[in-house]
Length: 384
Image (tube, rainbow, N blue to C red; front, top):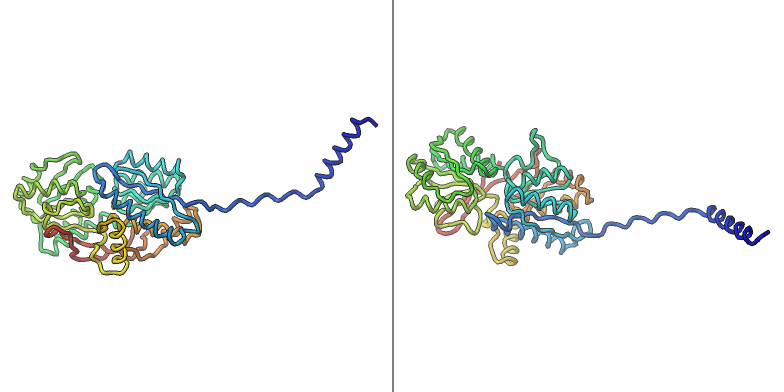
């Protein structure tokens, strides 16, 4: 037998021997011990940057508190912060970036409805859980056919409730006539104006005038002349603080005596308290609330950031707690399971005891606040 044949025989024997050995078990996949990423999308620049700063700071404080006690599911939480500018295009870009590049499964944000609505379309299509702290337009959580988006939630009450609250409050003070000003191009502002008008007229109030403007307008004298001429008892202006400051200052200059009222968009440390003195607005919480959860939150936030937390900070903090509690209850980093847990949650947070209705809107009370003598004070609470 030649050497070549001997070598072949030995090789064949080795192969046959190896084939008789039991196959090695495949290695078990390593448990996912990396951080759970949570995106915070907020307007850190653009028209309402104080909203973004408060939202970011409230969410980050909540994440820090959870990480201090071990994170969630035994994993640390990593915040991915992006500036979404309260504007549709930057918000869409931010959402696509955090989902596709950063691989997040969860989004806290946006603040403004006109930014949250396009983000919600992306998140719903890609199976990413989104909870907006402060976007009050009903369309944030609803599809075009009126059904509920599976993955989209909010931590704030919605425009129809704010409109009802302020209409009831104004009529409770004996007012019967109202003039409504609103930005037709802003989903939040238009929605709140429509909700107020509906509740106001259904309860017997009269709308003596209604005018629209754009977010780029800075001179409201023509509209305010109509307000003065109408002798309306209430001027309902459901816009953000930057517009409220301009309108309120010009109204004072022109001697308009209507009592100004609005929604949670007024809530900002940059609200001109002198110009808006005497005005009222609906909000999600008051730092004057004596509940222990509120007292502890205000103390911790003030110590950390050197400022009293506004509703934006409180709601971002609440939204983060709701989300992380849902992940914990789901026992999984699967967004579909987390969405199911979130829909069924009941949790006491800073802004009250929260559960969700079938449209993923929280069921909780609203606060009415007044601007008076340079500060904002709690007036009363209105339950659903």
